[in-house]
Image 1 (cartoon, rainbow, N blue to C red):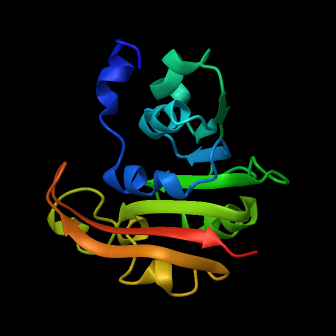
Image 2: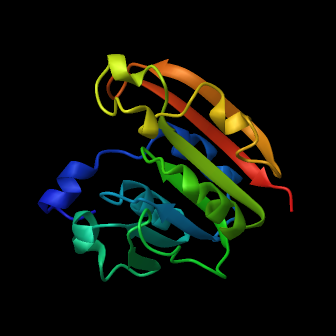
Length: 178
């Protein structure tokens, strides 16, 4: 990680991502969807993965442009075509982002045996801060309600956390059984 301001804003990778990183195919290609500052991309690159980092605005990862094994894709995931049509990934990670129409695309892009690590805000988070809008909060049990049909759930939580700040979260680690 560089010493510029983007690097200082990154913070550590999510404990959920760290906990289940070993479930990913060693050296497999990983999609870091809505990558933000790139904290997970850096973590996965250090573990020997090639990473495709995608976000609507790549300003948080400009210092990583020349990093070996990293592909940067700037794309509006909500208002433009899915940028990964025909591509498959050994793992896909999504944290702190929810756009429900992307679920079918994510599942199609997950290679057979691939791992999905998804962690985002859930109903109840409105009492802790943003996001408060229900459009950006998973409903109770939503990730288990058929959204991930065809995947084998390896771990799931619908919890309130205190660190790094109080939040209501749902998170899942699932394997593509296809």
